[in-house]
Amino acid sequence: MKKHSKLFLATATLAALMGIGSSATATGINGAPASWLPAPLRLVGVWDVNVTLRDCVSGNAVATFPAMNQYAADGSQTEVGINMSPAARYPSFGTWHFIGLGKFASEFKFFRFNPDGSYAGTQEVQRTITLSHDANQFTTTASVAIYDPAHHLVKSGCATEAAVRR
Image 1 (cartoon, rainbow, N blue to C red):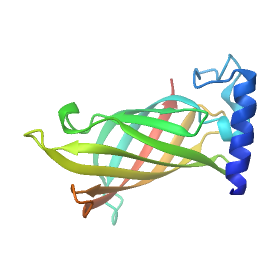
Image 2 (tube, rainbow, N blue to C red; image 1 turned 180 degrees about the vertical axis):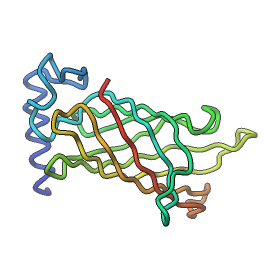
Image 3 (spheres, rainbow, N blue to C red; image 1 turned 90 degrees about the vertical axis):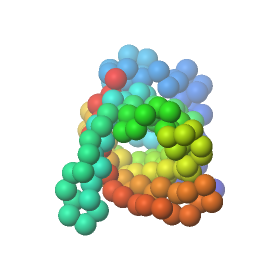
Image 4 (cartoon, rainbow, N blue to C red; image 1 turned 45 degrees about the vertical axis):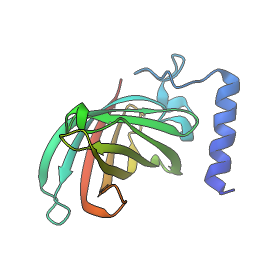
């Protein structure tokens, strides 16, 4: 088992024994400031996110849209964004883990659908999250990959995000 996985597992077990769940608020979990939590758990909670799709070469913004993310103490995450109609995509499911010094790695995937309702493939996002010192904001850099139903890469892209804890 990787070193960070052991640390995360130990911290998550301790959190479970203490009754800490994924019910973070702006002040943190169970009323304590989020910055007081063990580093691997500081991301736990619900976040309002502003996503900016970017040209990977120039870095110029292409589009922006809101999203919501939820990170659970067990390393799972859910995400939903409104860059397309709800009929065109399902919510995302994924995982996250602590990588050190206020940074986390995250990856998630969702199903995409054509206007006629037929399956169009998947979209996968990999991110590096940088948490603020007070653990109430984060920024990310992300890579995006869109696949057809046979899992052939159709398009790739880049994004950045800015988030605030709910």
